[in-house]
Image (cartoon, rainbow, N blue to C red; front, side, top):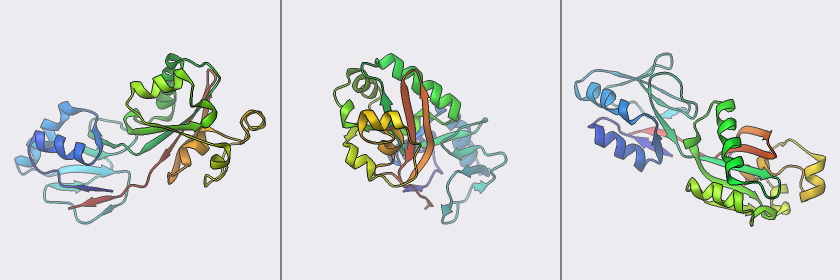
Length: 211
């Protein structure tokens, strides 16, 4: 859940975004937004999530041409605030290196059009818990990584992309989507495979409240 009160100085906006667990993608644009607010001009905003409460003075919703946007898929010239609510589910061949995982993740983000800054944690099957490349990849990004048994993955809620090969190797029909969804609310991007790596992203629950 996020409660926004963004009227204030450049440093104030940055600190409040950080406090609400949001990444500021373009810190150089904060000055433009904060300057407009301090000058009493209305700033247009947009959100990927429904908003509870009334916007504070100085903010007006405008999805067509926002100057401030709460989103996972940044585009345009707005100041983008990206909540860190994503869980990256990962599957990979044995011995896959951290560089290969990083390249696959970057290509995945570009293809899906979402900000990599939204990822807060990673998850996989317990068969991968000693994979040095996977551990190094997650550590380099500061993500905690959690490993689940095949039985735990089978209990994940939702419909997933099945693979007979993955089932034969791991005992569960899908690793990346199921791992991402353990404890999450919504599958954002389903299974994508490249260079022996499979990835998917699920989102934790998040709400927007003005106040």
